[in-house]
Length: 246
Length: 121
Image (tube, rainbow over all chains, first blue to last red):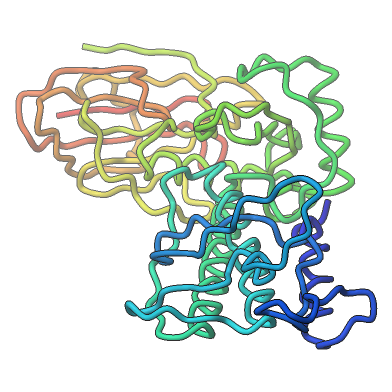
């Protein structure tokens, strides 16, 4: 799945709210306090755990089969507290908040699979638009960190194509595994830099575990990728500089 | 005094430093030996192509008979010099009598050394 596709429903919701109108979207019945306003279509359902939001409105309990028209219509970002003031984002802002928060959370999750202690630098904001920008900044920082790690061989690199499953973290590769990784390397190049020449005297690609055995904090299952000797050296240098095994 | 091991180190790298570690030098492309005042990084023979013999001893005992590829000073505050892999596992070690020692490194090939000799004095 391409990064971001998992939020397709959120994008659709955002698009609908930005267009301000959807003939299929239900409204709160006349006579209610929010009468005439759009109700949630149910796509926005994730809660918010960001410590920067001091108090979100807690949705009322929802009983099965009950028609309801309360604050749930505002989604998870019905109200946010900014500088001690309760601020009510517009529906469009709520949708954007939901999308950018999900994007930031997903991007940070990807980084933390490899670097569990990593956190984006905190951002200051004074408005809902500022909060949206802060989430975007978080996601951007996370993408930059992923790219930075990829450049040093932590995580499958930008040129990663095929790979084969690793039997374990050991480096007792079979002849068949060596042949297969060399084949992938000859077709796709080094997974970190893309170069087709492994740069080794016998022209064998380095068989690279990903996540690297020395940097697999969550003990995820590993796969084997071809890597050139130069990127392997850079990876080892980075691991050593960053304290060795994780 | 002399000790040796035949190894295939991960990432084809070994580091010479104090037993408690040192500041790993910044990576530079195609550089066989890199160093800071607390750590020397040495590229070995590519691990998937073959092993490397690493020899550690006093310079007097291990002198390879030609000019060393590295000759410099290294801080060893605990008095135990260590040859380590990328995850800081010790491969070889020796006691030294000074917190700053002279280290010489000889490689038997300018690019694909499968014999790395580390002399300490």
